[in-house]
Length: 352
Ligand code: COA
Image (tube, rainbow, N blue to C red; front, top):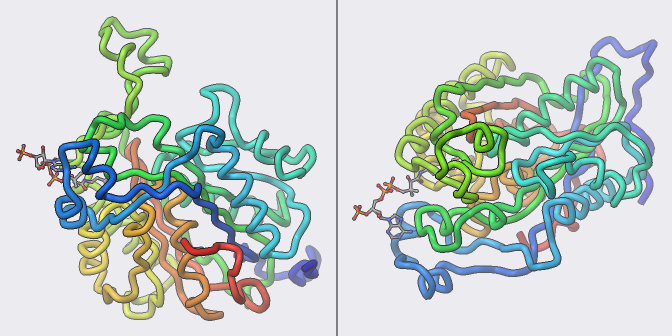
């Protein structure tokens, strides 16, 4: 269905904001349950559920990479918004198809978007929030009228399938939103908060494959192509960063905690979600839970959770997004669910 662009005119709009016009999601069809992982690894369904809340995740097939996931989510978001063109594509990913070049131009070409500017943002699990904040600025500054923001990751390409500490946590997937420009009365993205702390870069990393490995005298840097994570410290830093960033963005939007309708936090671990909700004084039943079905999908986590929750979100409701990831990097966004047509019946997201 083709829809008209949101009404705004560059000359007449006093407060131009970015609104979500459509959402889309795609996860590869192969479901891997905790029971299946327990057959290959020294782990159990009980441990994984108790420690993470995850029940299953999805893995890419041999013929699928990050661009394939991203393009499908992007197509679905555009179909949902009823638009056939965008002015820019921003892809959040830390598992690009190639170390060089960026993956976003391929995604734009796969969707048939012509020669629009397209680039990657690498902030690991905080990537989508970074990309969304950037898309918001691009629209507010009138650099573009419509931006496709995608979060996509294929962590199965970097996780050691024999490492029980990480293999049980991550899954593959992609989620996307179409951001459009609208009059401020329509709501939209009201406040953003981004931050990083590179002194914690060692907590989450893939040692091999980057410039550091080639310039290092440590041969183990060169040899280890797999993702490494200091789980306990990541847990503590994630709780702290998401709590503090959320508080800053709530202040920026001038919202009190009890007015948040939906907390969409990075889907890393159920225990982290609960602690962050408790720290913020937001009732746990307002925290969207999707990780049980798909695990931690890194940059895809927030848009996937948003697409999953979309049928239950009503026009004008307040959403608080917050994420933390490697870098370390974190970010939060306060937004109101879009004005009129955009988000009725997100039928395209399927059973996610
Ligand atoms: N199955 C069974 N046992 C496991 C296991 C698994 N999959 N993974 C680890 N264990 C074992 C450990 O070997 C350890 O055993 P030991 O006590 O005999 O040495 C024990 O469980 C505790 O391991 P530990 O790593 O100390 O547990 P933890 O309390 O830190 O929980 C995580 C592990 C990964 C669940 C937790 O650290 C976590 O969720 N961290 C955040 C990860 C995350 O969200 N990352 C993304 C953020 S962007």
